[in-house]
Amino acid sequence: MNARTIGRKIGSFFQHHASATVREAAEATGTSKSSAQRQRRALTRRNQDPESWLWETAEGFQWLIRLMCATIYLFGIRGGIGMETIAEFFRRLRLDRHIGVSPSSLHRLTVRIEGLILDYKEAYEQGKGGCAHVIVGADETFFEKVILVMIDLGSGYILLEEGADDRTFLTWRKKALHALQQLGLRVRYMVSDQAKALTKLALEGLSCQRIPDLFHASHELVKLMGARFASNIRRVERQLAEAIVTVALLKEMGTSPGKLQVQEQVIATLQAEQQLLLDGQQRYYQILQAVSATVHPFSLMKPRPQTSGEVMIALYDLLDTLDGLRAAYEIVDTKHRLQKVTTQVEDMASGIDLWWTWVRESLRGYALAPEVECWLLNGLLPVVYWDIQVRRTSTAALKQAYEAAHKAAQDRVQRHRLTAELSAEELSRWNSWAEWIVTKFQRSSSAVEGRNGVLARMNHAQRSIPLQRLKVLTVIHNFGITRTDGTTAAERLFGEQFPDLFEWIVERINDLPLPRERLASPLYQACPALGG
Image (tube, rainbow, N blue to C red; front, side, top):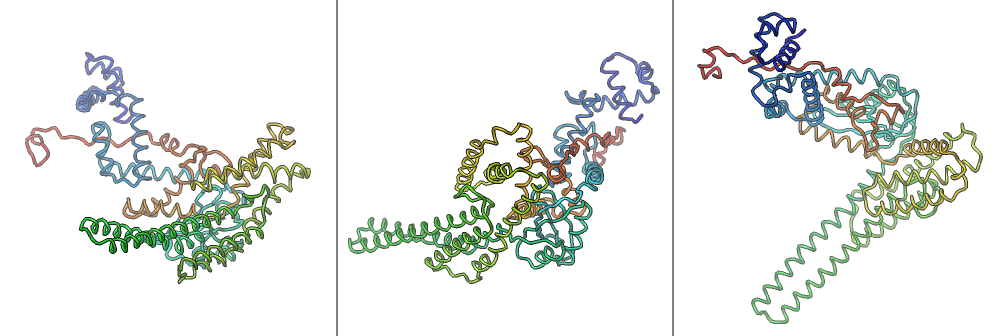
C-alpha cells in the first residue's frame, strides 16, 4: 500500500471521526501510529481550501486523474501548450498541495501518456487491413525535416506521416510500401499534384493510376485569374476614392464648371471600369464553380450518371471560355497556368470511369436482377452521393445546386416501385453499401493539405515537432478524433469499433505525481533565500 493510499484511508477516517486519536486511526486503518501521525500532519497541511476534502476521497482522486489526463492530452499533446502554462493552470485550481504540478512532473506524466498512446496503436492497428483497397492522397510538408504524408482519402486515416531526409521517389516508395504492407492495404488509385516523384510513385511504386488533384488544378486558375481581378479592382477603387475627394475639394474651392465636369467624367469612367471588372470577376467565379460542379460521376443538369468523356468535353469548354475571359481582360498567362490545367483534364476525368468500374465490380458478387441494379445505380446511389456533397460543401452556390440535385434524386427514388417493395432491412443494407462506395470517389487531396496545415500550426506552437510526438499525433488523428457522425478514421477504414482512446489511457493511469515536500524546519522558515 503506497503513501497516497494510506493517506486517503486515514484522511477518510478522520473526516468521519474528527475527535478520534492517532492510535484509533492506526488501528482502524491497519497502519503504525507513527505513519498515522505523519499522514495526519500531511492531511492538515493539504486541507487549506474549502474543496480540499474532495481530493482526499477515492472518487475525487479518480476525477483528478481524469482532469490531468484530459488537460495534458488535449492541451499539452494536441494543442502544443507548454508545461509551464499547464503547471500554472493547476496551481490556479489550487491543486498543487494534492498532486505534483511542477513542469518536470507534468513532463514525466506526458511521457507516460504518449507511451500509452503508442501502446494503443500496437494493440489495435496491426493486421486490420486485410487486403482492402484504398484511394490515397500524398504530399510533403517542410519543417526541420521533410515530413511525408499519405492519407486514405475515403476514411481520413493517416497511413504515413514520417520525417525523411528527402522527398525522392525511392524514399517515397520505401516508406509508402512499408506502411501499406503493415496494414495489408492495396492502393486502387492515387490523387496528387504534378510532382514527378509522386507521379512515379503511383505508376511504378504502387502500380496504380494517378488522378490529378482538382484542388491544385483549381488553385492554378485562382492564381491566374483571381489575383489579377482582385488587384485591378483594388486599384480602380483606390483611384475612384481619390477622384471623389478631388471633386469635393474643387466644389469647396469654387472651381469653374468646366474643370468639375472633367473630374466627374473621370469618376464616370472609373465607375464603368469598376463595374466591368466586377462583371468579369463574377463570370470567373461562375466558371471556377462550374469546373468543380462538373467533375462528378452524376450530372447536375440531367438525372443520370455521366462518363469521363462527357466530363472531358465539359471541362474543355469551360477552360476555353475562361481563356476567352482572360483574353478579354488582357490577363497575361506568363507561367502557362491554363495550359497546365488543360493537359490534366483527361487524367482528371478518368477517375470517374475508375469509380464506375469499382461500383460494378462490387455489385457483381450479388447477382442482382437488372431492375434492382438499375434502381441502385440510377436511384439510390445519386441520392446518397449528393447528400454527402451537400454536407461537404460550404460554397453557397454549389450547395444550392447539390441540394437541388439531391432533392430530384430523392423524388425519383420515392416514386420507384422497388423502394416500396424492399424490406427495411434490405433498404438499410443497400444504404450502407451506397455510403461505402461513395467514399471511394475522390477527386482532391485537400485532406492532405489540411493535415499539412495542422502540422504547420503545431510546429509553430511547439517550436518544432519531435518525431516521437509526431507518431503520437498520428495515432490521435486516426483513433482519437471523431467526425460529426461519431466515427474515427480507424473505424471508417477498418469497419469495426475500437475502445475510446482517451478512456483507454485514463484506465491505465492509476497514480499521479506527488506534490513537492515542503520543508518545515525553523531554519527553512526563517531564511528568505530558502523560501521561508
